Each structure stands twice: as C-alpha cells, then as structure tokens.
Length: 226
Image 1 (cartoon, helix red, strand yellow):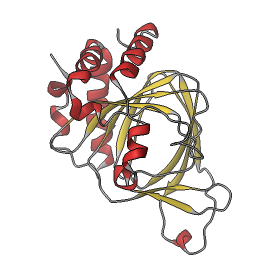
Image 2 (tube, rainbow, N blue to C red):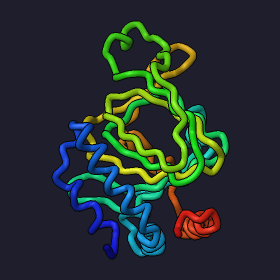
Image 3 (spheres, one colour):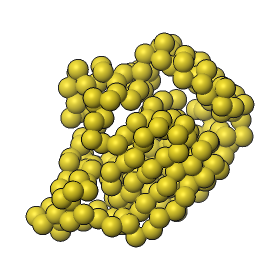
Image 4 (cartoon, one colour):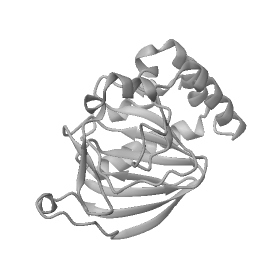
C-alpha cells in the first residue's frame, strides 16, 4: 500500500447511484487511509509537484464565500480517471452551511473534531415556483471516527467545531447544477462548480504552495498525519 491510488481500486467500478454500495466501498477505502496516515503525508508532500491537483485545491476567502457560511480548506489528494476524487477538508471557525445538495454523491470520515449535521430530505421540484424554507428531518452529531455517505439529491447542512478535519471522497458529477437554499425566503442559489466562477474568483481562493506548507504543518501538529 504505497499510495492512495492503490487503495481506491474498488471505487473505479462503483455505481455511485447505489448508496449502500457507495457507503460500503468508501468506508473500506476511508478506513484504510485513516489507518495508514503516511498516505496522507505523502500525498500532501507531493501536491506542490502536481499542478493539476494543486489547481483544484481551495483556501477560504472571506469575499468569495460571503453569505455562504463556508469557511473550509479543500485539499484534493487524488483524482481518478473515472471521475471521483479524494479530498481533505479543514473546517475553520465560523463554518455554518446553508441547506444545500451536491452535484455528486460522496462519503466522509471525520478525522478530527465534530460537527452538527442536519438532513432535510431529497431535492424536490415543487419549491421552484413557491419557495419554502426546508426544515431538518434528522439532526445528528458527527464525531471523530464517524463515516457517512449521501446521495447527490440529499439536502443537508453542517455547523462545524473549530478546526475539524474530514477525509472526503466525492463521486463523479451526476448533474450540472447544485444549489443552496436561502433560509430567509427559501429561494435557491444555483451553482455549477468552477463553470460558474470567474477567473478572478478562482484565483482568489486558490491554494498556493506557501499556504499548503502552512496547512500541512498545522495538520502535523494536530496529529492528522500520523
């Protein structure tokens, strides 16, 4: 087990619409990586020499994330030809999501800290004409060691403890758009990933090698890297 690429083999033939299979397969991969933290250290150390991956990493920017409640670093450790990615998320203080779905199904393992997790149910078409503010149908606390998987249609939100860290596997994109829900009036704010962002917005939140070195040192101090 020399690198993450060798661990993720079971995910290459995965049907990302079958959530039982997604949870089981991703659980195995996440647990293997967590049990072999040198894989994380190696991937982080190699990132400056992988410009195609470094360009996908993001550092929170107050202006770029204004009103979205999202203050987290997204570190892309691996991208597979089949379309899935292995990422690490670092939640800074004040990370308080709006209800949202995703363009892809995913699975997550909490490496450090905890966060309050609200599930609102699947996306619907009814509220596009008459918007409604969604109410949580389930609320749970995701603690260190928790693993969960969500289909891309599920609406959810997070409120993180300061400096929480998760290991995250996102599947291939299943649709063009996802959305956030405005808690004031229920209206949707649509998002198509990088396709919606200007070059200036992308540049403003790009992870630089210097920021990556600082983050790696912080993760090391927290014991994330073994």
